Amino acid sequence: MANPRGGAAAPALTVVGLGAAGASLAWRLAGTGVPFEVVEAPAGSGRRSQDRTWSTWGPPGGPGPFGPLVAASWPRVRVVGPDGTVVTADLGAWRYRMLRSTDLDRAVRERLQRHGVAVREAVVDDLAGVAGRVVDTRPVPVPAGGRTLLLQHFLGHRVRSRRPVFDPRTVTLMDFRTPQPAGGVAFGYVLPTSPTEALVEYTEFSADLLTDAGYRARLGEHLERMRVGPHEVLEEERGVIPMTDARFPASPDPRVLRWGANSGSVRPSTGYSFSALQRQADDLAVQAARGGPLRLPPAHRPRHLLMDSLVLQALSTGRVDGARFFVDLFARNPVQRVLGFLDGSTTPGEDLALMATSPRAAMLGTVLSRFPGVGGVVGLRR
Image (cartoon, rainbow, N blue to C red):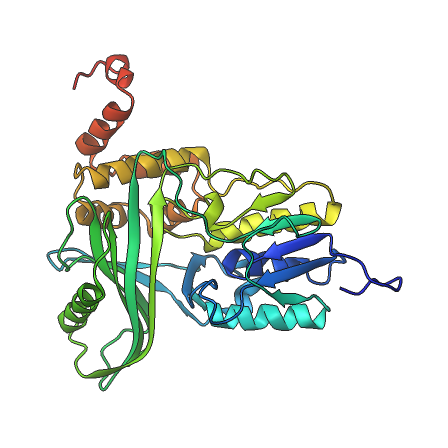
């Protein structure tokens, strides 16, 4: 990029990848005076992040600098149990929000162009030739060594129905009227943007993926269950997100900071990452402005990671009924407490209150299997 003193200068920082992580940092760095460039894989290379819908929630003003890009928001959420029981919660001043990756990508590229930041298209297989500091957001294989690995895999269709069938004020976070996999959980997810349009997803947390025909069958069954009726498919969205308590290794190159899904920014128990990435991007932008090595701030609190690990273990071993577990969380707690926990913003007291509403025998069994000495401490035996 251009040197304001005249002549050319290598960027002091290279951001590799323009997905949620790279775009969030690039937005914050643009206009700060930090010399940097972005390297993104060319379209059609198969190396770019797929188009996605990201969800966040919280009080007015979020998420971070991307509030103007929110495509839709809702004041209510609901969860539907396997037997059709509905738990609906009003969010008060909070909102559940949706952003589209295509909108964010366009806005970030326009901002970078205005500030003269180069976006270089290249497939990066080796960082040895990249000068200066590097923030690498490319995916890496899921590390071995975790106690539990489930996959969050889904197929979603943005549909337009012939008749009004959706409630545009209410998000369906989880509808468990779907066949449940062993050692996991499955549900429908609905983001309605009008009485006749919605993103409807079939989502599964399990160890194994389905075939393409399997996803389409499950999604079709759920649309029938919702009585959507005749409809057209406007867009399709799919993905696979690792849900693991394994630790992601740092880069062996001290110049390179791995960040994003390759560093544990994804919340193990939910697959959510967008809000955590915004917090980390704020911190990294401040560090970049100061110069020197970049250090990745924690995405999640240690106690939340421990709780997530226990939940994943309880799900995968079948100790807890996943559908009932999540329905009870929403039925027995204020909605802000549950969403705050999923976002990592709850206090220790709120976490204890949440734990008190979980299936105690099943979760205690999971704790004892992990920490056998606990039984003796509390006077219990397995």
